[in-house]
Amino acid sequence: MRPLVWLAAILTTSLAVTGCATKKDTRYRDSTLRPVLTIPAGLDTPAYTETMEIPAAAPGAKPPEQGADIELPPPMVKGTEEK
Image 1 (tube, rainbow, N blue to C red):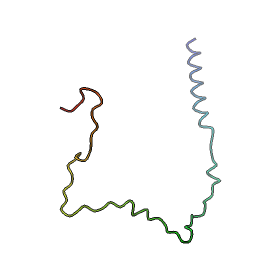
Image 2 (cartoon, rainbow, N blue to C red):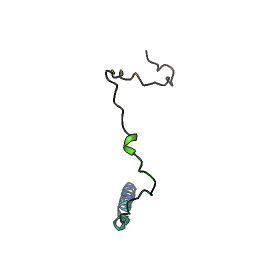
Image 3 (cartoon, rainbow, N blue to C red):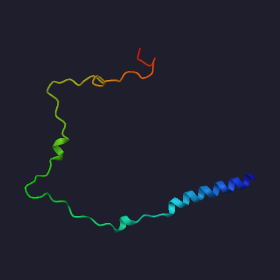
Image 4 (cartoon, one colour):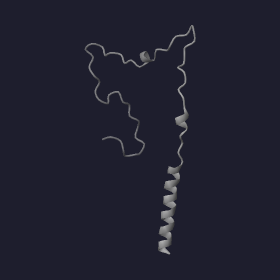
């Protein structure tokens, strides 16, 4: 009985592995490039780069202490508070 179980396990595993490997989705090969989107007349292109700018630090400003600006939540389990 034991060799039969091993045979069934090996067959099931090999079918599962090869079943996933046989389906090849090649639709991407037939894809084409679409034309670049154009901004309609009278509208401006949004300035995405300006929203990502980090302001410069003020002259003479000291960096904050590590963790000083982090607010920790209260402990969830009794006895886990810091000592």
